[in-house]
Length: 256
Image (cartoon, rainbow, N blue to C red; front, side, top):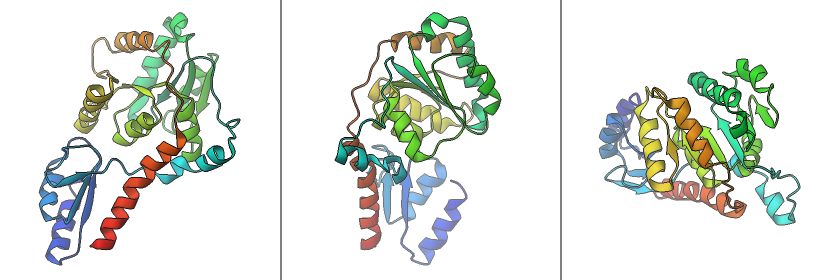
């Protein structure tokens, strides 16, 4: 963020070692300037900064908490697997009301399409007003807030998602094999760049929130996902992908 730049320069003057991790696909000006004063630069995506080492993302380790209990003891009973393809609406931020409105509009006007899916809806605390509208429909799991341990179990169930373009959400869902319909927040360009990267690299989908045919585009993409079932996630691989970047950063700290 722009407020970190004077702090980075102050640390550089005082010869305090600095490590930065850029989590988005496009760094903004303050990060690009700061990178010249920094001892070690890590990035979540390749070719983000000239001096950056592509490390992947720093994710909350609680996202894999309890995975070892399932893998060590073969106890898959706690991991629900739905009979139908399952789509997750993962839009909990304050600016996501328009996404929920679009989803509810599709659910009300094309029930035949929506009948193909089981649905998980993460409202977040900012969108609780939509709860009563979602409760009118069958096969909907509703959550206002979930912790990381619950979240990975929902990721395990989901085959596809409708989500915003925050890099952490996109990376977490991708780790669990989820196919994504990404609707970036239009007033933050980083989400658009993130979405474009996932479209290029992983054949995910992007819909512009301000588009004239937004709801119809979402609907058409849902048709392509009616029979999509992801491969069963390998939990030990996911755990390794989350732990490895942290080990690299700890190693860098100890060397500096």
